[in-house]
Length: 208
Image (cartoon, rainbow, N blue to C red; front, side, top):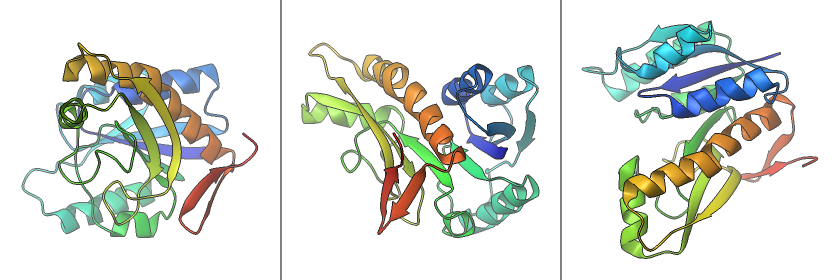
């Protein structure tokens, strides 16, 4: 079994997708063993508790990045995490995280990296930028986390169309439902089955 620890900050829709996938047996040998939140009132904590998953809160408010990263890494080591998944986790952690868990920290970003990514591109801001640019397709990317914001090896990507009458909220929902909620569990399963190789900064799914 591979221990999956999910980091959250808000509602936890991506966490719910992972929980549902585990119930279906779609995480392979992966098991969500702990959910850690950066905020006390994240609804994601309720989702975890409702499904019998251990929860922890490591508040970010008033704590510097490096100190917060140290606390998070210590917690992840305590939880014996094999895979760390950032699921709506609204904190940028320091380099100690990917250095401690190389190619074992996953994030889902609501755009097609390398477009519309990096500092400042999060939540609705991403979809606002997509609409402002007039692109005709968008999507989401599951990638490993490294020292560069949204710069780690790309694991999986999926695409949806951008419609003429889209609002950021409508586009956000389309990306979540059609890409994020499907690709994140798939990437987690591939990792837990040992089917992802990273060579020269490029991630490749083996046997898919």
